[in-house]
Amino acid sequence: MTLRSRRRTGIARLRRFLLLSLLFATAAAPLNYRFVDLGAPDGGSSRTIALNRDGLALVIADAAAGASRTFVSRGGPATDLRWPGRGEFMGTSLNDRGQVAGTGFAAGDRSRAFLWDRGAFTQLATLGGTMSEVRGINNRGEIVGGSFLPGDDWEHAFVWKDGKIRDLGTLGGSYSIAVAINDRGEVAGESRTNSGDLHPFFWRNGAMKDIGTLGGNRIWVAAMNDRGQVVGSGLTVDGEKHAFLWRDGVMTDLGTLGGSESGATAINSRGQIVGYSSVSPGTTHAFVWERGKMRDLGTMDGRFREAVATDINDRGVIVGRACCGVGDDVGVVWCDGAMITVGEVAASNPVVVNERGQIAATGRKTAHAVLWSPAGAGGTTQALSGLQ
Picture 1 (cartoon, rainbow, N blue to C red):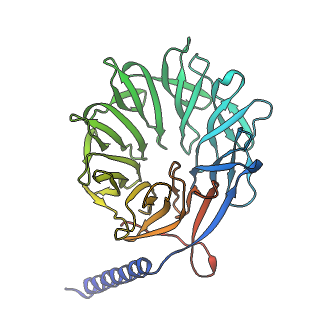
Picture 2: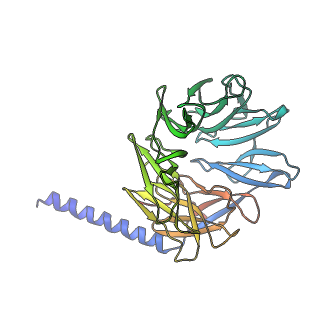
Picture 3: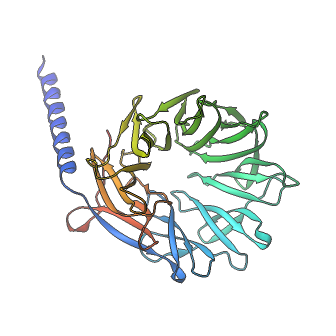
């Protein structure tokens, strides 16, 4: 062995030692989180919808009088997304540029897709019908969702780009909806077939492709990453609901943790998938799927009866909910092999995480949108690393 190769080997060993030491220290020491209540205008409740890379949270506030409004906040003064004189605007998607896509409700409760960008609203055209809805927006400002055709009998998936709307068609039936769009402009969604079954589709460069099923007649698409990998859940031949992954043209049943049901909720750019799976009747655990295997994320040595993973960032930090019974959900983060609770959350709303490790959710007792930021000594925000 040459002197140069011995030096390289020594450096590699030192790096591995330092990395293992850091991971052990992080997992052993409890993380601190700075907590911010994002509030609720008009004395009502609020709920988190999305969180972008810069810590901007998209929030829906429900006033005591029944009206709803949308605002964005980083924890300081909020920006109210008002639609003056037109009715309610419900934001549904947020990108890293701070653009918000959502649905406006005007006279007669006719819903129309809108884009909010730096204080200005843009109403998206429809495919000829009177109503449309938004499901997603990418970082290029391209928006996907569904729009009725003339006569309002059929609904088709659409993509809106550069001020123009495009009909993505269907897989032979009368209905399709676009659920997700990545930064390459690829679209994933669901469509009825000629037989009436609900199949997932992948759209790219003007072509819609049926990406198959798990043997049953229904699929639900949850998410897609920038590599065009699609996850969700679908019915098997036996009628069980299983998590799935579609990548490189292949549909894969991810299986379960021993029970009869599972579902994928999110996928990061590295192809790591999180979700939930039953382990026995009445008991559900969170999972992460990577390198071809589904791994149980545990329940903190039995402290919790159920757990669900709802999001994962590109560092591998996973967030979700856990509970012992009905109505006692807490937000949890899985990081470096440790399961850490961050606070009480509402069971019916998502828990999301960004690349900084910031977590947004809806508080259970306050019924307010909340934001947690990981903090080190002195309260300074620190980055979290997760699965490697």
